[in-house]
Amino acid sequence: MPRPNETSMLHWVDDLLATGHYAFTPEIWQREHPEHSDIAVKRALSRLSANGKVVSLHKGYYLIIPPQHSHKGMLPPPLFLDAFMKHLQRPYYLALLNAAAFHGASHQQPQEHFVMTDFPVLRPTLKKGVKINYISIKEFPPSLIETRATEAGYLRISNAALTAADVIQFEKRVGGLNRASVVLRELAEVLQPADFNATFLHHVHGTTLQRLGYLLEKVCGCEALADALFEGMKRERFRLFRIPLKTAISAKSYTSGNRWNVVVNLEIDPDP
Image (cartoon, rainbow, N blue to C red):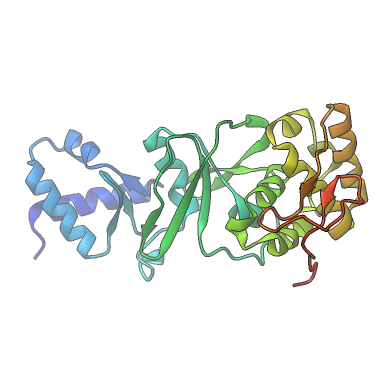
């Protein structure tokens, strides 16, 4: 039979779940139940963890696993990420392929989740086969980040333009420039010329903008988007330095006969 502490904590956890909360800290329980000792609370948490009712995501932070997710023993990150990052007091947004899926690149099924946050660098989170990688950046322009509703509350994701830029800048994280180009082609269906505004242009690295523009024009065939990006960069007085399309490959003996001044040292297959 369950011990009294386990039974009372189980009821409390079920009540949290019923009100749409998927996580808690032991401190919250202890504030509401000061009669229980630290040791008793740890024992109750240990038993609930062993029964698959909760899982420790981070030191002092537990996720509640509802019946519909009990077969995996873990929640999908969109259900807990916002609350978890607030617990850590970190700015964030869901990025790369995970954000692309929200914008319609639905057939891209990422095996890992990528989250942009600030410094210091966070170590990856790996629980029950679910991995979250954290990429540290310096700035979080509010106008480039969207808030989406989830059954657990809200989730911050990069907008389509920022997602496109991030996919190019961090192409190694998504499987290389070929796959990044496939994702970009899908994102191009929801991108608008007005998305390449001053805030976007000032936030994204100039070299990333050059590669983005080249791929939009030459690989995706999206001339209107490429023209809007190019005109925006010209208006903001960007200098287009000669850069390689693929940084890890030598650019010697290759030419940059395009307006983006991108040395095409890698053949992109638009239909991998």
